[in-house]
Image (cartoon, rainbow, N blue to C red; front, side):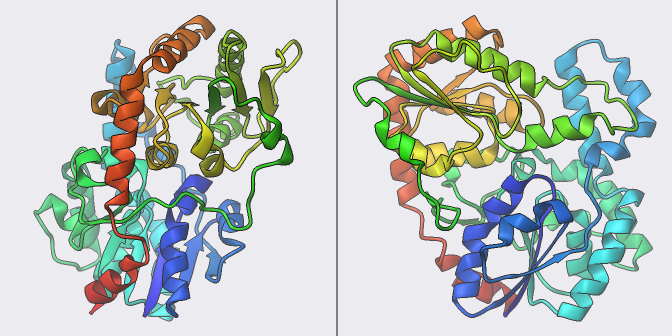
Length: 402
């Protein structure tokens, strides 16, 4: 079987695909990943063919004509919601053509039996329909917040332009289902059903281990881990190059890290590890119970953590569920606000609404003192463990591909 996989966005999108692609490659199937230059390194250690041919993907760049109307919305939460709806409506807009012009010839040359696509990739949907093969989105935060009814009108416009039949079913976007790594009862998807659910893996990156200093961390007190993920630093780095200012000012990762460091400095009865994702921060005056690192193997560290202070990316949420780690979620953009609300609704942690150092510290103390989130997190892990291992996806995809 030939499997074509598309990846764009942040490295977390590719890491969510790795367990699935590894299982396929191990079973002897040929896997080709089509991505952009920035994400090639994610797949460097795996037995897959990587083609860095896609243009850089920035969904916000397509919103220019609509921003004036969005700016008239006074309430910032309503602005963010409208911005999300606009992004969904424009994903299959005319600006999809450069992506499709690259992907379609590559797919015709590779002749895949099935396409596994990034959740935001509408060009892959059209490519699969043109080739007459199935396509499935892989786990992503965008798939969780996407309303297919918002995408359908523009998708049908592109279908008409390409000579494809129009389909009035919004779920034609996921006609063969979608892949997820959480049980349906714990799904974060607002509009899409879970079709194929497999067990979230603990160890995603190959040949990784915790650094030696981790073994020296005190274990006679709660261990708290804080991180802001990979997407926010990428967005921060692109901000200066943004041709059109967005009507929503995303939280600054440097300010967020400063608030996090201020918060965990107050948790002097805990041991704290803070991952900066390479963002420079001032560590002068950081107390001894706080260990600051540029990066740590997150899934491994979470196996021993009592509380995860996180930005709320979907990868991080799943990894915490897999390790039964309660969550304090400080969201920044995209699906993270919806994830924070869902975490709270499921009883797995709290949505931090007071972004000050004192507010963050107060939420962390509340969660550490409350046994209910820990119990609920253990229930979530047990439910995760009822799912089949990801290797079962190989046979399922073989059946879908016929």
